[in-house]
Image 1 (cartoon, one colour):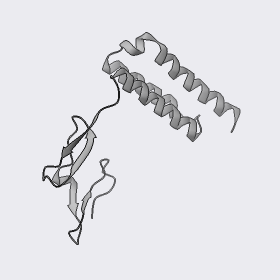
Image 2 (image 1 turned 45 degrees about the horizontal axis):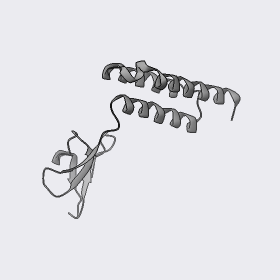
Image 3 (image 1 turned 180 degrees about the vertical axis):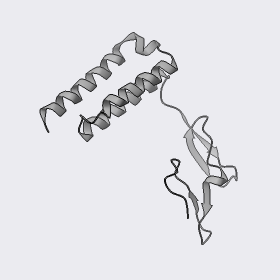
Length: 122
């Protein structure tokens, strides 16, 4: 690992730590917290960090956002519209609709499309 990567990684971690320690971070509004989170992600993803440090930086930014928002979302079980399955997801999210699913050719499985739309179920 090159020294520049280590220095950049440490700089990003120190910057996130300073944001976490500041009272302004804890008192910020949701919009400001989200903006800080996006800036922290930009630092993490600027290409100067090797993968392990980048991943750590992203996790720290997410934890800081969660703390600002009162903690991570609470997962709650929710029944699908057809009542055949229970989806555990953050409170307030909607379970997949029937349009997001396809029955397999043999009828034994329900295929759920990826949320990012990268692939369509067959």
